[in-house]
Each structure stands twice: as C-alpha cells, then as structure tokens.
Length: 190
Image 1 (tube, rainbow, N blue to C red):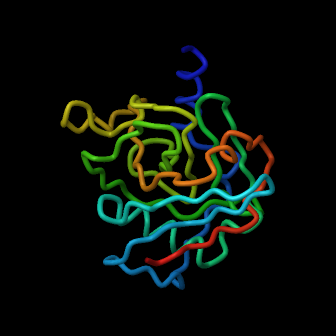
Image 2 (image 1 turned 120 degrees about the vertical axis):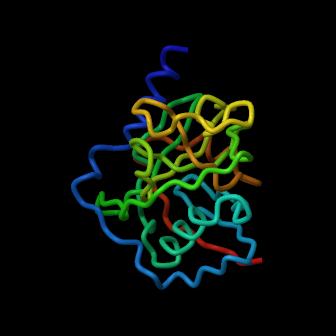
C-alpha cells in the first residue's frame, strides 16, 4: 500500500521533467463535441485500443483528440511506469507538455477497473497533455466520493479526470516499461 500512496503522490505532482517546456495543443484537431471517439495508441509493444468518454469528459477528450491529430504524441515516451498501478505518458518526443487547462469533473469519472485513461496533473486545474492508464482499480484518484466532489482545490487531494477506457490491448498496457514509446496515436470518429 505504501508504494501505491507514493505512486499517487508522483502522479499528483505529474512529471517535473516536462514542466520546463509547455507548448500549446494547437487547434487543427477537428474535434466534434457531438461525436463519439475511440483511439488506437500504437506502441513499440503493440496496440492499445480505447473508447473516449466525450459525454462526461468533453474538454479532456477535446484536448486529447486535438493533440493526437496534431501529432503531439508521435514517438512520445511512457515516462513513468509503476507496476500494479499505472503507465503514464503525454510529453512529446522533446519532453514538452501542452498548455494547462482547468478541470471540469463529472460524478461518473471513476477509476473502477484496470484500463482507465485519466489525466495526470500536479493539482487542481493543472491538466496538460499528460495522462495515465491504470493497471488496477484506483478509486482514491476519483474526483467524487459517495456522490460528493472532493475538495480538489486543496493541495494533496487526488482528483483525476477519467476520459476513456481500454477496450483491447490490456496485455500491452501491462507489458509497457518506462522508456517504451507511443509510436503514434490515431483518433477514430464514430
């Protein structure tokens, strides 16, 4: 349990390596707020397929779709891997991350199974391009507890926005090691 709590603190602080080089997500992503989306994350270990939750996580899906369509994640590393907990990526190939944006939590954002795609952050309203995929259920990362929003603005409170779930390739998620690469991220509009 101690390692999981330490890992939670690491995710909450995001990655300091990338903080020096923020960059904008651009706007050429062709995001449609009324569409349903899925994604194929092609890695050097195989493909990860996931559905994106545009209905409850629109601003997060918009950010991810636009960054992916702009090629931001191409050849980007999985820079943090914590066995039994998460894999984390989202800096570009040069170690930079996208500009920060604010949170918009929904009660149905739950880290209730392996394969949850969620935003990494270093506190309230500090989302960028970084995200993680869970290895296991991690309810302590949920923004809501028993239907009530946690005090996410209080430093040290873990509140992470769920924006998708793996539908295929969980074996790949579990095989990813630190330094493995997202070769490409392909968005599929349904």
